[in-house]
Amino acid sequence: MRVRELARLMAGLGPWADGSPGPATILREVRFPTSAGLAPAWLYAPTSGPPRRAWLLSPGLHHEQAGDPRMDRFARVLAGAGALVLSPSLPDLTRLLLHPRVIDDLAAAFAALLAQPELPAGCRPAVFSISVGSLAALRLAADPRVSAVVTFGGYASPAGLLRAVTRLHHETEEPFDPLNAPLALLALAEHLPPAREPAALTAAWTRFVRLSWPRPAMKTGGAHLPFAHELAPSVHAADRERFLMGCGALPGARALVDDVLARGGADALDPRPHLGRIAGAVHLMHGRADPTIPFSELAALDAALPAQVPRRLYATGLYSHTGATGARELLRNLPALAGEARTLLGLASTLAQLGG
Image 1: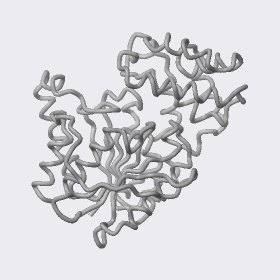
Image 2: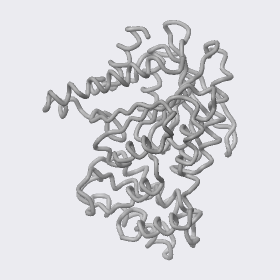
Image 3: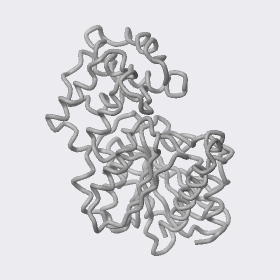
Image 4: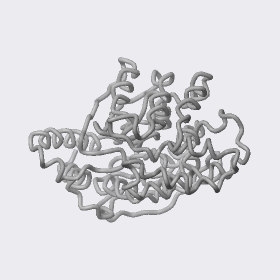
């Protein structure tokens, strides 16, 4: 590990980062086959010399995928520290749909990374997953050509994930983002009773998510509820109750989720039965105040990993589910900041060594 590479990672990943796009890198588009046809991925490489390691990013649910400024910046930070990085856009996740197809699609992106001429000889790339991207990343970890997996905000239990996002905004005092509730019913749509006009229902939920996510004020005090009612007329009258349930504007989404879970409809989204096949090391990182996937999923993933799998856990307050915690908040408690700095140093050291 080079000190310069570690310093670049620390400077780019900490809460003190300036939010700029990140180091300049060589970038081109790569196309790879998926269940929905060819999909794009962005390839990043260092400008200071040939890459010495490689990373595949496993994205979470976001309509921009590789084009999300946060994903772009993270890829640039890794590349600036000497890595070849492939950041794919997975079709289902682009449509805000968590589906088992992402497992094969990520494997296809990994094959595309292995085929790049810039890949260092003898390199075993590592995989970094964001949020629900942990499902595909942990399945890909069975490939012996994968050296390690790092999950950020991942999950162990589909029940834990789906029940957490379908809480109502007044039901918990824990950190909670109510804008993700539609994602649960979108993921389970094929296991729910048929909607009268399913395309319109899906479009309305997707519109709710895409328009509300950039507006932080909607996350508190039930501010998202009037917006849900505003969109309700865009779906068939017979589907409006379910639409409002999916937005947390009416109770009932949790009951729908529990019914599907009881019938095994989410079993294909469970990574735990396959963790025994993991061939490399696993590094688990989770924010203590994650408002989307509960912090308890960190311990659940750790407990589900077989004893022979090398692992390391990073519990942090530096990051929420979608970004860094501001330095101002951390500076209010200097002893805590010192501990967080040690955690970040450990993570940065890991990122600077894996994928070689």
